[in-house]
Amino acid sequence: MEWIRQRLDKIKQPFQKGRKYEKFAPAFNALDTFLFTPNHTTQKGAHIRDAVDLKRTMITVVIALIPALIFGMWNGGYQYYSQLGESFTFWDALGHGALKIIPMIAVSYAVGLGIEFAFAIFRGHEVNEGYLVTGLLIPMIMPIDIPLWMVALSVVFAVLIGKEAFGGTGMNILNPALTARAFAFFAYPTYMSGNSVWVSNASEVDAVSGETILGKLAAGSEVGYSSMDMFYGVIPGSIAETSALCILAGALLLVLTKVGSWRIMLSAFIGAAVMGLIFNALPSMGLEGNDLTNFPWYLHLIVGGLAFGVVFMATDPVSAAQTMKGKWIYGFLIGFLSIMIRVFNPAYPEGVMLGILLMNVFAPTIDHYVIQANIKRRKKRLENANTQVETAV
Image (cartoon, rainbow, N blue to C red; front, side, top):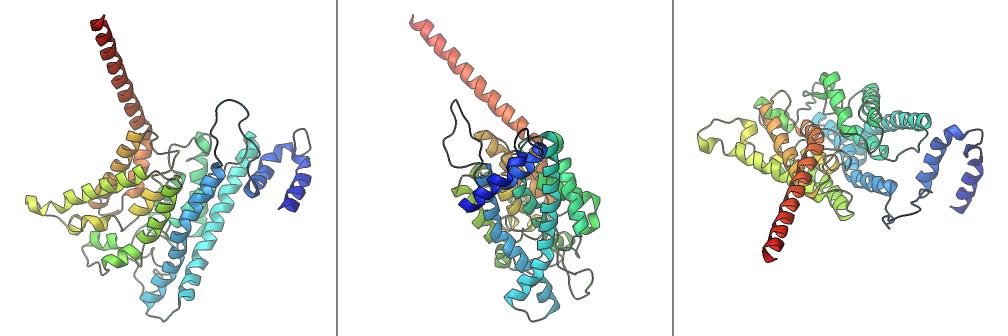
């Protein structure tokens, strides 16, 4: 590593202040800080004494995503081969999925980082590490057969409109990955919904059906999967959203490293469970339900994109609520609204994307009222204390 450090220091000379390539210093420094710790620290005043920086935080999230990503690659091949009725090995399934998914990841990083570098050079600031996570999340929440050019356009929209328009990393009000998915969903709905987009080559091979569990429930047809299939994730769906087990492993890492908020995760699942229980109670109240309302509340928590969205996107520290009470309210409403949208909208039997984006918009409002309530409570406490002092005197 010392040899690499020396070589980088030598190459770095033309990029230093006042030198020929000073304007392009942010692009070079991005490589430097990716390989080594950031070379800028606080110099005076009180500051946090901790080894954690933005790069380490983002790398932790990437590591937490790996189990879901690897399983998503395998499941992509498994769904294809198993529905064709062909014999296959673990490596056949993993290889098929990898050939579909790795190019999507490459396109996402190439396009997204290209825009990030361009804005860093234009604005004269360092390249932020935030896209390390966003660049991986975007392909993971897409259908396996979405064209690469659609992934590229979605990334451009997410980075330009969802983030850079607000000032870059740390300034965005919406989760960039979900912004990309929302763009793809509304711009190219036939590639983002239906029964032929969730399993590889389902639209080309008659023997393959890519209908998801929520799609089957919305259509009133039989699910055909056990609860353990749903928990392990051997079902059709977006690339990395199917395995609740792998998502749980990632959630544990985020919670143990304190990178992800357990309050948001827990409250979101509580909100989803409450909404699911309300729907399950409709028959007992004399109201006629359907397959989605009668679907057991606990299964609502492990199918669709709810678990993945709650763990990896609702907990985004930039677009989520910041206050302690605000996190409980924010998470609860995400889960509650996600199941409500899922059940009430048969044309779009999934609601976590819209639920999170909606609450991203309201997160500052939630924090505002939580803070104002704290201020009023303290003012009242001060008034009571002053009254007691005056009475004593």
